[in-house]
Image 1 (spheres, rainbow, N blue to C red):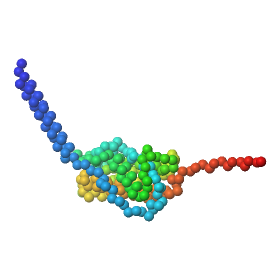
Image 2: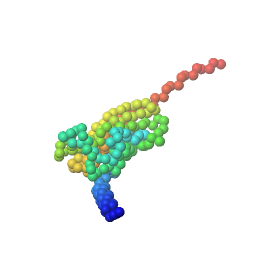
Image 3: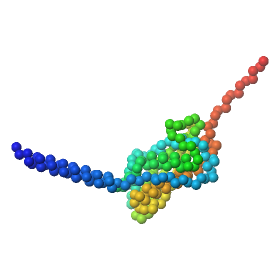
Image 4: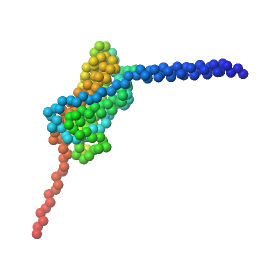
Amino acid sequence: MNLRPQRLAGAIAVACALLLAGCASKERAQNTVFDFGAPVPAAQASANAALPPALVVMDATGPSALDTERMFYRLNYADALQARTYASARWSATPLDLVTARMKARLAQAGMKVLSATDAANGVPILRIEIDDFVHAFASASQSSGQVMLRASVFNDHRLVDQRSFTRSAPAPGNDAAGGARALADGTDLVAADIVAWLASLQGRMTPTTPASPSQPLLRR
């Protein structure tokens, strides 16, 4: 039996596998990773005194597509219903994690003590964030922005205090993945500032209502 053809076929298969592995490795090496960058300290707002002293910030939730590191963009001028992904760019973490981390940072900079879910205590308000959209949106081939849409809810002692939807759009400095990352980071900062102002407007409403104790009858001697 002549084994040379079989050996040749095996060698070719191994060579092809190595070639494909090399191409995949090269593609991974060219994959650019983006995050929001370090949060630059914002100017202290005059309304900070009205903010709650402490706040539990739950991890943001949203569509399953935002629970991956993929970067999405949308050509609204061509097909607003189709979400596309950048082939050679990704986030360093999921958008849900990035937004959660940036919100915590901005709330802490505003003067609040930011707690995690495991640190929840009676009487400390809870902030829940649900992200509806987080995308690099193109109005035209030469104009784009980072669009952030989310819904925020404040609870205290299992009672809904208030809920509000927030939408912000920040212009992208470039019509590529880098420009989209910058715009989405800026858009998230704008929403965070809106949430800080909203929380300040809830002063007095986040105090849990304690039912009055029934009066005790006077003892007669």
